[in-house]
Image (cartoon, rainbow, N blue to C red):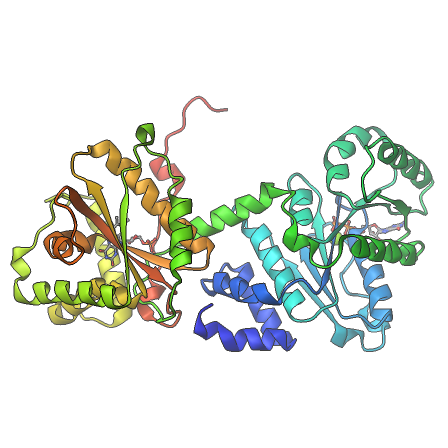
Length: 489
Ligand SMILES: Nc1nc2c(ncn2[C@@H]2O[C@H](COP(=O)(O)OP(=O)(O)OP(=O)(O)O)[C@@H](O)[C@H]2O)c(=O)[nH]1
Ligand SMILES: Cc1cc2nc3c(=O)[nH]c(=O)nc-3n(C[C@H](O)[C@H](O)[C@H](O)COP(=O)(O)O)c2cc1C
Ligand SMILES: [Mg+2]
């Protein structure tokens, strides 16, 4: 966790509604602090019982959520609700929370929040899980998550919830097979809502038959009937949800490895897209075991005929300080005497690369308030590379010089894997080609055998969230600009 998070975490843990709302907004917007926030909440999770309510559009999910909210608030519970991709105003579904005012003190004990789908892969799933975590940490006894059960989202809710309730409309008709394929897999409870419909009884029968032919399991999925609009069957549903909660115990969702699909997408994409080159770190240390775990994961990167061309020299504490000092001495005393062994950049810049490269320089110096032409400050900023931007851990990557260009391809994959594995652990990095220039100094300080060539350095640690240089937002070309598709349609 980074230090700046601490007061916010305290406020969330204390149940401060504004802190809760703000944290969820940060998650929804995929704000940079979101990753740290989620990581910091980790130790405080697992007390709430999380109930996922999913099912076809218009099945009556929101009406049912309102009814359940009424039941639980009536029992004196604190209840949070997260509605994912809620009904558009056009379809005019039930308004979440319109029952709260009917409960004494309900307004203080309920917290309702909608999350809009943003379209970026895995983002909604991540935001949903994060919002649930925030409410869990804030001390809500029960957290309800409403999602529309189309495509992947049932799977999503299963990973987020302890208990998943699938709401079916009556009149299942020929859809039964389709429902069987998708829904039964995720449901802990099946509910036929709109029990006031003449078709409801038939739907309950059909679903019960399906359940009956399933192989025996420790939890047999009950099929229930509710009329959410009148409240019929809702207390019985609440009782069954409680029974399931008792069956699985606290925090099932945190142990749920049975539905990796959408969760994995969110986790992997999150680790990749939240990575950025961090250029100021907090002093907070990183344990050797953590670095070893990251390198072990990264070593699963592919390489041609499994050649594994990477070699890593990890420095911290005195070793890191000594390396930094030696390079800074060389930079000061003999700046012209050190050049790369391999060309990283072309000797002459052409478009569009020149402009992209310039944007990074301009952006960084702009954030730091370094004026154009202020070469002294630019140099000083550049020199910060050699203290690994204050990171507690520095890595120097080397390669056997007998290897060819193909191995450098492998090397890139390894480097990215290191950075992504770091991100997955809430850590930040900066890959640093700047070190290649000082390969002679590095070779001397680290006693590298002559056959090892310095590829890059890398800073590893916890980003300083308040540092202007860490606010550099880099852009990417859209897929259409760099990928050509043929033969689709
Ligand atoms: N007759 C009857 N109507 C119901 C019942 N439950 C919900 N409805 C109605 O069904 C419509 C849709 O209800 P919602 O609760 O908005 O359904 P939803 O599943 O949340 O819908 P989306 O969020 O748009 O997917 C509303 O007009 C509700 O009043 C019920 O038990 N009986
Ligand atoms: C191999 C490699 C070497 C890099 N070397 C440096 C470096 O020496 N110093 C530095 O500040 N940034 C360095 N960067 C960071 C890039 O400037 C940065 O990745 C790029 O601007 C995109 O920004 P982002 O990583 O924040 O998305 C390097 C990146 C890579 C991949
Ligand atoms: Mg709804």
